[in-house]
Image 1 (cartoon, rainbow, N blue to C red):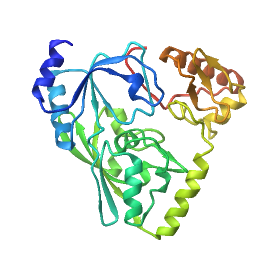
Image 2 (cartoon, rainbow, N blue to C red):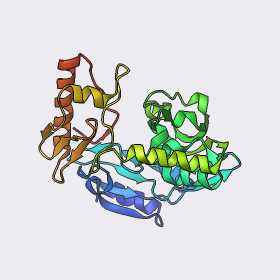
Image 3 (cartoon, helix red, strand yellow):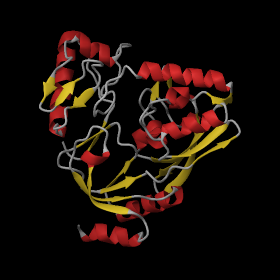
Image 4 (cartoon, rainbow, N blue to C red):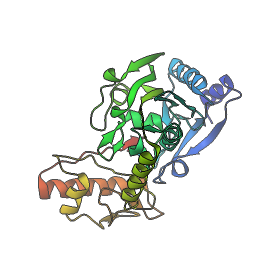
Length: 298
């Protein structure tokens, strides 16, 4: 490991860290090379201090939550990975939930259920952290994070700022945090008092709907919807179900899910993504755009 990474570890001697961090082992799709170093801050304060340190030193870094919507290069990433696994506090304050960026959406929903708060049942089954979900304005069941975010605390240009919802620039699969390269540290979510049995029934309904989604290692949905039509429908209409490149293939259950057979590489997924994009454009005239993020050089 290079001296600059040893020096970074020395600046945070008590912070857990991992050398030769494997993206294959830490992303849901299970592909990608390594990064020289990963650090695990143990709370929002440590996360902010670490972000300040890497920024001041001009070190490349990537903030990783659940790794569920990412494709890492086979060559890896030549920088520090900041893992938010331990930045996961969740607490209820009346009709609001305050959650750190590394908290799983499942934890947020569980807190809402304990307080009989409604408005968060669409989070059921989304394999993301609060930070990642806000970053890309994740959603399901016709709802998205923009519907429940009251404010976000973020790292922005060397300082911590509080961003009210109306300044988050939420749009379909986008937010200002994505556009401006800001890091979500925590968020305040606005829910409403509700009936517990109704909330639990709604969660069961969402579970049943999500049970039809493909199993296997994937990035979730790869492409954004386009032209008012779901990307999955466009891909299926173009005859791409079952298409494969190396160890990556298009799911027969949901065409917007690309599955790792077990031996896929990032190159396989890039090849498959480009083949799907070309076929859909040829058959429908629509250019699909990805909603996944890429890490490293492709």
